[in-house]
Image (cartoon, rainbow, N blue to C red; front, side, top):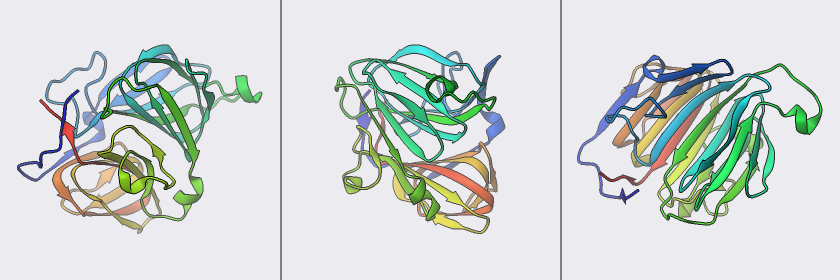
Length: 258
């Protein structure tokens, strides 16, 4: 996909409420889609900036996504509750849990599965669903070698403020962030207690998602779990938690062209 770093022509703050998202509900999966996904296609809602997918998924124990392919996509998975088992065709496997950042670069092609069956690796069967957010960002270079990275960052999150979880931006090189293959994008996460505040980065494109809890944002109404704000040509607003909350912020300095 072609991308553009041209500055937006106007400022826009677009609030998207949780109930407005498309939904996929089958026996083992409750999935809510911030953007067009699968059979849920809306030509007016295909992406924001470089972000193509922001899926809010709950998977019951013993089930999950069977082995399937991806190509030329940076996929970041963030677990909110429970545990998710990842296995892929490059030989990587492991359990993703809250506070563990994970990135998969699909590149020239990769096969992977994601299931709520960590007891097959760890031995302790559980009856808990896994709740996670999966995000897809376009890479700035196609046909790279597929790759995988994960990093425990729970300690940084406990210190407060926005923590850079995944980034391809030069200023985050060598920091705690896992690396993604797009030099124009970064994902930040904050865990906030009631009354805590953070300031959004300044960037041409921002995507704020309330993963849990509730916050207020300057120039927007109160935001509850599952609500999102797409900011264009804007930034620097202050987010304040009105209840314990976890927010996810994509900072993007380019957009998909066309």
